[in-house]
Image (cartoon, rainbow, N blue to C red; front, side, top):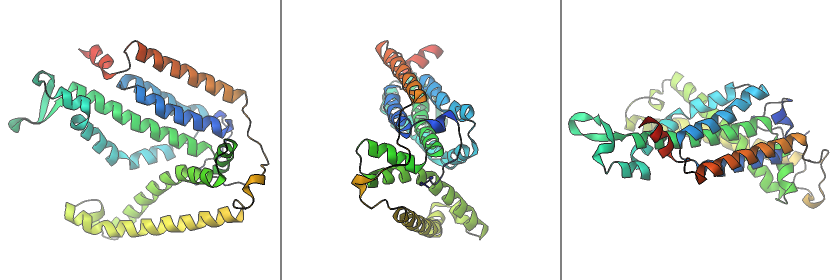
Length: 283
């Protein structure tokens, strides 16, 4: 019996049947390819393609939605900060003709530009794309399969286990944080979710201590599970019950990835990959 993963959902979908190395390559490739896109329209299509995999595979979408809800404050802060701090948005502020309106009109503070909005949406979609890709990987891939795939690439088993557990532990930690927050609020610690900055700061120990205890306890349990399965014994002569092999589904996935990469290269070649494309549609 292998390590199933902290947030793994058993299933028999085509995504479950893909080799773990295929999914890892997809994740790395998407992370790199999205950096060549700064237009929110193309990033939205790419994000929709990844999200549609949940429907095509029949995967329960609640774990993904729950994880995204936990990231809402981060997404809001990330979006707002890019309105003014992103280099393209900052450059647009230099020309008053680009300003659509002010958040505080009487004082002419916090100007908003169309370029700033497009860039902020694009940056937010990049973040969501990474989150969705990670969730699909952890929901459909056992840690054992990740380790097996990485060791096929001559990565040390310890490093493979660290990568696999790292992918799976993040959503669990987010969900635990939300549970602890609700529990502390029910006990009267209103400062954990509301109140002034000072009140929230004073309430932080009520959140951080249980979270740290949970993380350490989980790490100890994982260490015991790994030790009991003999992952530290004679790693050079280790064998697997099922050797990873690329099948027809993996080749189809690589073909689709190649088509996406080709499309992005063409968009870059014809200068359609930047936010100027969508801006031109509305101007």
